[in-house]
Length: 383
Image (cartoon, rainbow, N blue to C red; front, side, top):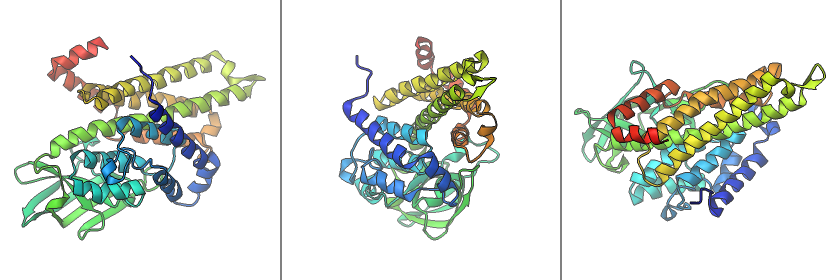
């Protein structure tokens, strides 16, 4: 059995690595952070020109027709450079469900522009990781040949620049459906919100008597929960892919720093306590990688991956905290300087860790799955 990536997959990884490394240098990111901008439009267009925005878009809609593995390889490289482009929201939250459940007309309308770099997507699903008392909702009411949407959704990832947003909504009977909503439609309000030092990466969404046609319905009416569960597995896995890149690069930079920085005339890395912390970081990064790859393989083979995805996201939340905390700590005063690059990895790692459910929530959901399904429990024992 060959566990290596294919030649095409390695070529995609190398292309993504080259693009992100050439553009998102430490010097560029520092200068970019001083402009007040959040997203690098030039990098976004380069990704479009090189076909990476259409990596998981069907060929009929102008993409390359590849899959989740290839998309995750690109996300890993984005995480490695902490590159300021809304790849995750557009390609994972918006692109994947439209490619899977959308009609040919919807794919042409939304995915073809995505692949060319002229359209950005997102999904209003942040509530799944929120306390029930804070979660907002959207109601849909059939009217004529379409629907009327009313309600609120909080913290839409990269919603400040999204052209279209996938919005879950429930009818009076509690049946959920998902709609593709034009961000510029009448009655749609997006309030940009800043997260940490990363800028305006999210937006609160308000829908007041927003009228959408039947062609805005993704999948079938009442299929919303099925689509949402399908999307959540891939959304959590996309977070894991980003986290692999973030934590591995943070670890490598820290190892290089303690190998060069001297105290009492010898490198910091020569002290046993620091060496042990770096060894722990290495184990944590490999734990994130191995659990994420297992879940990625099962999903790409259309196998049940519910437990594996939850386990991988738990590692991506819990272990990532230790890795980036160690990176900050071992950099000493330099780690506290917001113009020194290591802080970017800490911020992105923590943002990922608290999106769509933190470590405790992932562990709780994993426990529920194992308790409800004996097969999942036996599979966990085999691992």
